[in-house]
Every structure is written in C-alpha cells, then in structure tokens.
View 1 (cartoon, helix red, strand yellow):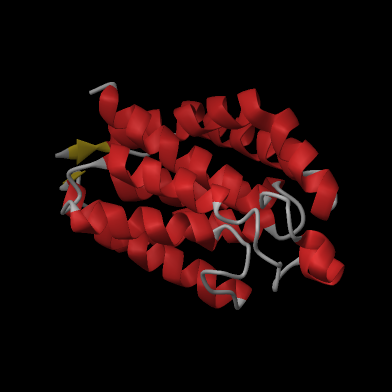
View 2: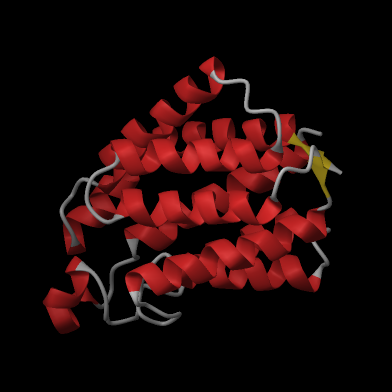
Length: 204
C-alpha cells in the first residue's frame, strides 16, 4: 500500500529531477517553444516542496491536490495549469483514503491524464506531454500498478518518440515542419515526473 509519505517522496523526487534537468528542459524548449520550461517547472516544484514541508497533508490524495495547486499558482504559461490539473485530478480521484493500492494509483493517474487531454485539447501523437503520460499509464495499468519502473521506461520511450513528430498543439505547432527533429520538452518533463514515481517506489 502507498501512504502519504510515498507521495511526498514522489513530489520531492520530481522536484530534484526537474532541478537537475532544468537546463536540458530549457534547451529543448528554446528550439520549439518559449525557452522557459525548465525554469518554470524548477520554480513550481520548489514551491511544491516548500508547501509540503509546511502542510500536514496526511493522505495521498491531499499531497497531490496540494502539489497541483502550487504548480497552478506558481508556474506560468500552459505548463502550470496542465501539470496542476494532472496532479489535482489524480489526487481527487484517490479520495480521502490514508493508503491506496498501486492499482488505485494507476486508475487515478488515468483520470488525471484524461483531464490533461481535455484541458489541452490534445491527444497522443500531437507532440505534447501526453506522448509520455499515456504510455506510462498504459504500462502501469497492464502491470496492475505493480511496476512503476515499466511506467518510467514507457514514458522515456514516449518522450523520445516525439522527436520525429510534427507538433499539432501548443506554441510548437506554429513552427509546422520545423518542429520535426526536436524532442518535446513537455513530454520530457513528464517522463521525469514518472521517473520520480519509480524512484519513490525503489526507496520503499
């Protein structure tokens, strides 16, 4: 079973991964976006860690709802609302339980990813964060929530698969064919988030 401490480790691990990879995320975003993805997420996840340190969120759902709220209020552009929606809707789907089974997290993540798709009006293949999140959720569901490592590997493959895609959503879509040949920064940061989930599992 996964308790609030597990979810705190997930968010702390995500913040560390984003901090470590902020320069790379910004480099990727400079090619097809606003060149601020790394800095924006770095600021947002730092705020998440600070908020969690000062808040007694005691359930898995409460941890994710708090994290999502912080990202929405501190990250500019589209990334804040999209990541905030992902975590808030996943947290709300988990409810008030003190502990959740991995398969429940898999189901809740599916709800969160669907909310991201609805908010952004995107689908897999559009060269967005969904290209990492959807295969991750599928891999996790196929393992009945048992393999976060499989989800992380699927997210990494999904992010890499955005390189030959032409962007159909977001700022990169304005570049048309010039968006081809670049890895999507949103898919890359999503893979970091799922990688941190696997890291939280490994630390148990």
